[in-house]
Image (cartoon, rainbow, N blue to C red):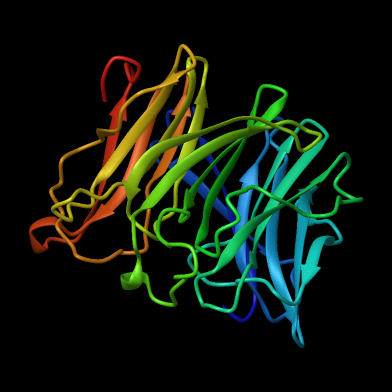
Length: 307
């Protein structure tokens, strides 16, 4: 993607007249010019608890990457604000930076190289109390391994932030860092942590010790606690979606969202998306099980019992 151009917002109104034509749905689409300067890529669009719309992205000038964001106010994007910049980042289309806002507290991440091999990079975090002045970066992963760390999900969690990510600390041996995915010594794992607004790590867990290598994670915060959905990986190379849940301060064992039975000896580089409303969860994901490519959607209102 060379340029972020337009964003469309739809307003749907339903009339109350006895005229059948007036009762039809009216759809209004407004196109907005994007706030980014070309070349730009890796956009991430979200709303906070106050329904404020944010957009983050990366611009590149010469050898420097600039991580920026903007707010949508009165149907116009505000002047972009720089979050961070650097020349040693790992920038790619599949694993984009992310920004989360919890009241007036901001937390963002990007990927920074930790070694010379292609897949050696860390998750760098930066924080801000107002969105204008940002801290120096600090690492989410503290294993010290030159391995893959990424596909991050960040969400407000009480007064703190909940983060889930894929962690490659078990994929390499000391002094054996490789440059190819198939050179792994072990499996990719799923981890999660709670970070407070000062950047302190309050908790950290390993949620699954064998997952797909490079598919996005997703999570939701319900009144019963956080849930994480991701593409799992069995010993037989079945790569379906799994869900884990934090119940009474204990994480459940991974359970399938649905047994597609997609067997693929490689990572399809696409993950699930989850949304929740009053503890009803909706999960959408892609599968090509039985050589049939399609998108599945599953709903659950009793996720704390089963999915």
